[in-house]
Image (cartoon, rainbow, N blue to C red; front, side, top):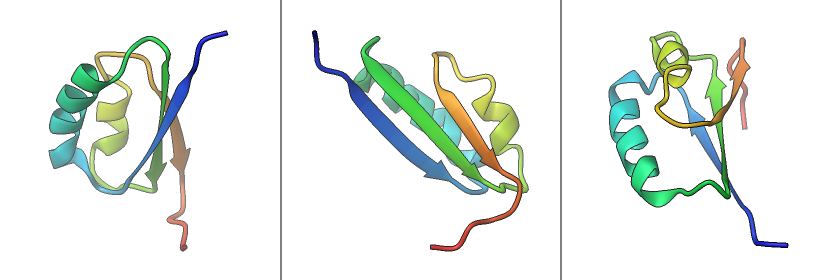
Length: 68
């Protein structure tokens, strides 16, 4: 069995940074990498952009901002 890598990325109101994140992830990850993005109650368009990512990722959205 091959090795798998999971990457967890927290975001909060990161709309302006997501295009750069997508570009970097596209270069850095392969089909064996599981990308999980946790949207911590963003009030901008982060969640909408995450749903249009040009590759597979798992989006977890919190409706209320979590502390700690």
